[in-house]
Length: 120
Image 1 (cartoon, one colour):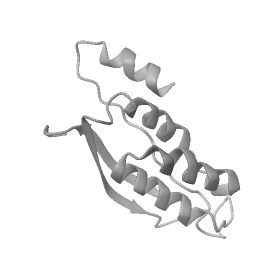
Image 2: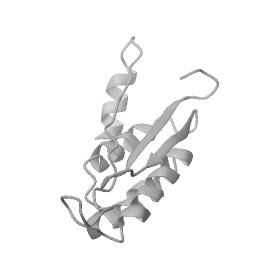
Image 3: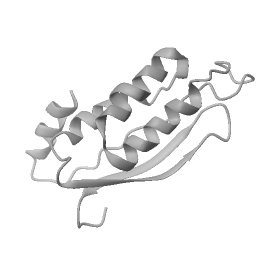
């Protein structure tokens, strides 16, 4: 899905901004609506490593494993789609994780991805 979406958007003559909700694990606190899971921190960490490196294995394998164990991230699907989109640009784009926090029961990630050598 991500690759197909990227091909379609890349064919347009306009610049496109793709914004993804990146709410991470919703299981950081026992008092939260989804309870606690030991998988929450490893899930959020794998997502941050992916956002810092664009290495697919962090999102498609490590984070996917923790999601399956109960991380309960509502943003996971959007991140996987974005990773598929990056398949077209991985050699010419860079990324940077800007923030990864969980001040309440769910984690939040802020990152940016864009063409190397351009302000984004």
